[in-house]
Image (cartoon, rainbow, N blue to C red; front, top):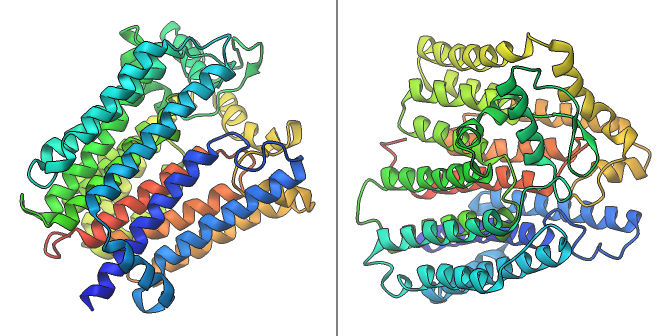
Length: 470
């Protein structure tokens, strides 16, 4: 039985690694296989890739007795491989691929990017050195091994800050945030149309808390990506801190430590995440991770505050809010649960109201109007692994929103009718999020990072907890 249980763990951590690998290869370009394909073929390939991820999620969620026998046998063979070799190869592949992506991006945007190759290769070498030195004594110097992941991640995240200027000619995420911060500090409406340096007039489609999360680095006149570096490393810190708390021992088993080392490596050294240093999701990942950490510790006041901030920052927190409410109502005494739920809803939407009520029409036009008319004006994106574009080709676009509602309602019914502990609730949210982003008008592959983060938390809570703690 222990052997079968270990097999289940192996399968799940391999699935998380495969999703990270697919994201690294796919990114937000039309690769792989679709670079030279016509739009219809590219759409079909992307839909098949989304279906592949769904298959992986289903296999991940299957109970032990439902798994195909060949998967069990294969995962046991993986278990016999030298762990240090696997970790070394994984890290080398990630840094090597990151190296190639930096060079590719530099060559693609020669008019904007100025990669200093001697300094660049020196920083890549530093990242490799930081990772490889502790590996031979990983089980002896555990903290040093974990610190090496964070240090290598920091070294890699510095490269785009040093050599890749923020420009809407490459991506418009942070340029829009910068414009909003200019408006906020000058006292004008933050929800307006902005002319970017690529000559395009852009809408502002994010929540008020999102741009405010960049205010400290903006006021210090620093590159906005420093905020992303900080939030990403802090997210990794809370994953590590939760693991330490859950194992309740400084002398956790070798297998447990090797797994958390791999999970942190996959997240912090992800080539796709590092190359997309402009993403503004890291602050949501951090707030979501802090919220989960407080739930693990049964600190409901901390959860209330952190999740209210998540609602203020990202609309995905709105989607998850009813599910956390169900979990709390089923887990805690009614009064305590209601105070927590009402607390994070009142605080979160109260903070939003401060900004929305000043210019409600502008907020609605930019936040919701953008997504309603995006596919009419520009069509669905053809580079994303999702089903909306496929439905458009089949002339079934009107089904997208009903399918969103049905999948969300089905997930909510499961949450209400089944007794779900925290890890199972997080797994349900990973599925819910997957289906939700399949049918929105504008979706990007980086959104899958939220699903992989939820899977990471599920894995840690499932296999690295002492039952009396959670």
